[in-house]
Length: 174
Image (spheres, rainbow, N blue to C red):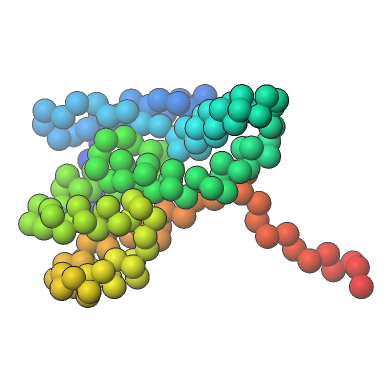
């Protein structure tokens, strides 16, 4: 159930230099929204982590430190950017255009419930955890499911460039 983004224009720069993109919302009285690349921004975060950890160690920890950041922090980082995208705070170009600002358009009738669900999703919980919480705390399950279906957390599963896919078994050995 995806809805249109509602942008008049999206000005995109060369992807290799993509840091900020200007968007023009169609909503009356809305200010332009900053747009960024999740991947470009995450590299900056990983490099900050590498610098801090290298300073502590007294030497450059190199790519292994970047890989450590990806392994430990990528999913949480991505989830936080996704929530910003849903809230309409920042347009992340790799995320679904129809999800941008979704929380400004939907769920006004159940804001406290939505906030509780977002807190759980932001903390890394998955749909099943949220549904179990809803059952245990007597939340209106139909509204919880409606929110989870609209948010579609499973659609936000991006692989970072430093995440290595499982290596295939070498079939030539035997």
